[in-house]
Length: 519
Image (cartoon, rainbow, N blue to C red; front, side, top):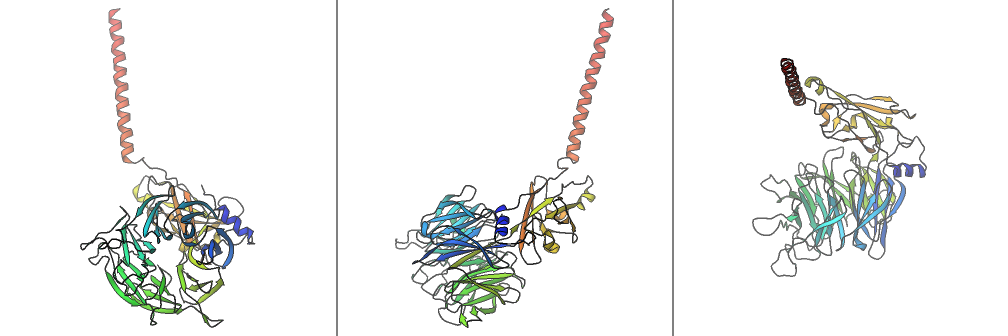
């Protein structure tokens, strides 16, 4: 069994001149935002390892931000100038649909289960909820009327948005241009269960009014464990804020720490990102005017480094780190430099600059690991529980003309719902007999988390070149429903059948005796 490789990506790699034996790489998608006078219309696709531009995708006027579905099948791009969200097929690298979203769609975040997307609309002061199964706007979240005296603002020029890893809450950053400090919620917290703003004892919603400036935060990010969110003080501030996002905590949605984004007043912190690079979980914040990147250790809520986006060659400052995004493996931090019209790439283990290349008006960035073919052997649970726990599952990562399976790092591979690790380094052999050597790995069944009823399983990993990949295949679990209960049912059924047969036989003999007696 095997799934079909993403033909669009494979063909693209060949078209741009990669040899048949080349190792396929992770793709990077960079929004070409443009500006109000000259809006962009495209998303540029790069090979994230060589930083080579592969192609551009026309998405519509003034694209701003994007998000990738958990299965890496689609990109959703907010097209602010057209009041729409463009849906891009990753396989074909083309727009397959545009969803009307009135009100100036800007920020976007997708639920961890891939069921819905949440889109902030800066002009209408709303958040739209899109059901991704049919790309339909199913709800628009609003707040009290901001023109009515006494009404608290739930949403005021919403911009950045992040969803907690468990999918329970969405945190929205409200820019709130030129409002008086404290007259608007810096953050709005939405429950995704009912799409309502979370209530608080004092009034209407969680209004974290901690910005001391006339503008609110542009962006918000949530650390991987889901317990803390970080946001900023907006264009004319110089602070970063840590907020408790753990619903079980007594200080839920309260500010935990205030950190200086820069020693320079009105540094204007902008883009935010968090993840787990080689040095451990980190939060990254870009400052506009000082052109710096602040690195935060969320375990201590302290700043560990301040990085300059200064160009070593020209001795000029890179202008406005607009968006910061970690690649899939967390090895590189990509930074879009708005005023320089370039993207800078940093090595997250050393913070050294590894690349800086021109990109037309870059904005948001997203990554899609390469889709590889895998082949999962039939899973045959043993009748004996002890043996079943040690049952091994063979999974082959298949080579193709555009991917060399031997480049996969066996220790990086995770398989199944529980992310099982391979029990050894695997074997190189041509599993599907197509002439290309494949990598076959073995996993303990008990570690995978696979259970009766599962129909497919996914494998993820990294290559020796640091590129991320994933593959999904059907899984056939044998032996399900044939345990003791099934045996007992069968045994009871056999006994009943035998009993009926005996009765019928006895009845037949009795009839013969009566017949003889009459004669």
